[in-house]
Length: 332
Ligand code: ATP
Ligand code: MG
Ligand code: FE
Image (cartoon, rainbow, N blue to C red; front, side):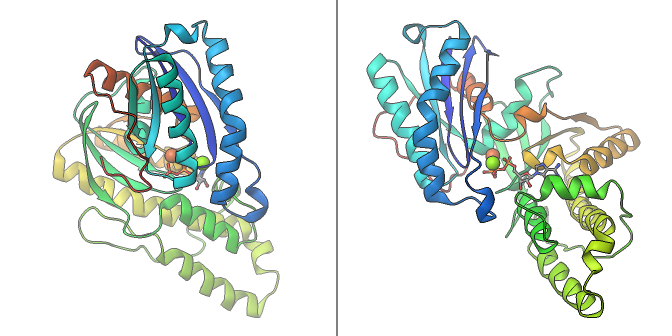
């Protein structure tokens, strides 16, 4: 079984080939056009996908050692994501599958983020809990099998990655600010400033409050000292990061208590955060959890995870017709 997988839900154009469940490559073209706008501009993302997709697919095929006539199926991200961006990938996948007369497989991007854990060893055992933390999502997922998973908690407003990026912007840092907060935080005191921990009912999250809290805090401080941010950048970053991680961990601990599941996985771009990783490692040691952290390449958007998901769907014969359409919002 060899499958070509395509990812185009946001600002990464990616293609990957998987052979009998083993990922052979993962070609990613990251779009830099969005940097100067401080966020992803949907129309520009679509145009960049249009430009990058064929070269990325060509590279994936040529470096795989598999010719396109040997492919068993074509897989693509159906959603969730930016409609215009998804359309580029879906249209290409349909045309390519049709021209080769092979089946088409649709993939849920968030399910694929979880299945990134099956690309390399060690792999989590079922059931496990996955904390998916990215630029657009924050979810606690109970994973019973490769294609059987349930969202048991999620953000009701902003995603945690968004909270990182938006508070970074308030500090005058360029987009995406998440990785910069991470690096400044290493030199700072996480208890220097206290920001409120938002508590939502059940296993749900809310990350919109911290943005406002930081905004008003900075406004008051800057009124007294215009150099406040400059002088306290490391402490501010450490304190914001500490607050966001606390909010993530409170619900994760609650989820472990509710489900009794102690195999814990993290996925999504924010799982690169060194503070989150350190906190999870410490917590896992203390509580006897088994922790799984994928390679960074497979945390952010990539087609290898789409390919992995497609492999499991292929085994079950879950194919779609050419009338399939992308979905900006998509549940499991
Ligand atoms: P989604 O998967 O929800 O559609 P996305 O694909 O855009 O969203 P990812 O590419 O998985 O999200 O992750 C990007 C996010 O991860 C950004 O918000 C970025 O700031 C954040 N991020 C990346 N590295 C770090 C880090 N070291 N610390 C904190 N945040 C980080
Ligand atoms: Mg991205
Ligand atoms: Fe993603």
